Structures are given as structure tokens and as C-alpha cells.
Image 1 (tube, rainbow, N blue to C red):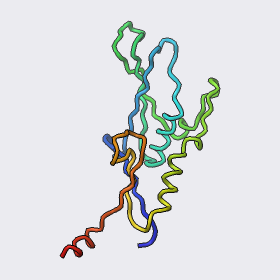
Image 2 (cartoon, helix red, strand yellow; image 1 turned 180 degrees about the vertical axis):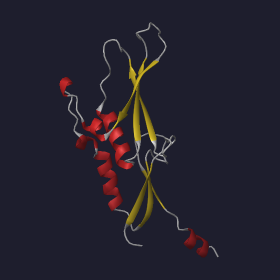
Image 3 (tube, helix red, strand yellow; image 1 turned 45 degrees about the vertical axis):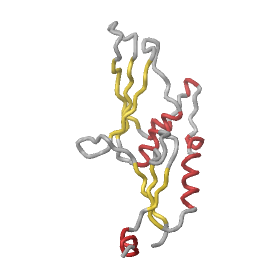
Image 4 (cartoon, rainbow, N blue to C red; image 1 turned 30 degrees about the vertical axis):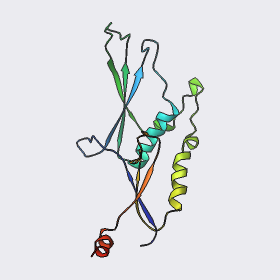
Length: 156
């Protein structure tokens, strides 16, 4: 076998009627009567990676008002649902002097790619979040495919 083949696993727990994965995020709004929270660079990178890994994925962000809703009800209220794209991820909030540098946030991806270059020829599975640690969304694990044909022939 020539080269290295890597399969990236992504958790898809919801699909639309066309079979496209739906990725859901929540943005909590603490003072909705004063305005909405600004998305962080980390959130923007998450949207971008979802779309890069699965271009047909639908990335939804629900804004939830925790208190102070306009109808006087203090229970959490869904304000809106936003459909995010790579353009939303790359767009900065210039009016707030927040500039988003997408390349600054790809250090982990670059580290994984450098690590993949060190692998011998074969088939691998990259798991994010890691399948071998309980640290959610902070590490990647790489697993080599076990060749069942050679395993069964060596045991006979």
C-alpha cells in the first residue's frame, strides 16, 4: 500500500431530511435588552472546521435569552436560530474592533498534519475529540487500522 490515508471522524447525531449533518451550538444571552453577545474566535473556528470537514453540514447557532425577556418572563427564551457559513466564521466584528485571524487558530491542525507526516504507510483514523482521553474537545487521537487478514493468518 502506498501512502497514508486518514479518515477524520466527526460525530453526527442529527441530520436533515436530505441526510446532511446538522451541527448545533448555543449562544447564551445574559442581557438581551442591552444587545447580544459577540461570538468568540473559538466559536468561529468551530463553525469553520465543521464546514471544512463536512461541506454539506448545516451549522446552526441558537441564541438563548436567560433573563430579562421582553414579555417579562424570566424563563429562558429562544431568541433566534442563525445558519452559519465559512463567510460568517471569517467575518470580523470591525465595529467592535474585533479582528479575526483564522490562521492564528490552526496551530492544532498544523500539529496534527505534521504528526501525520511521521506515520508509516497505512490506513488511520483521526478522532476529534480524542477517543482515548476524557478531555473534551482538546485533543486528537490517531488509530491505525488492524489488518484482519494478516491477524487471522498469523494465528493459524
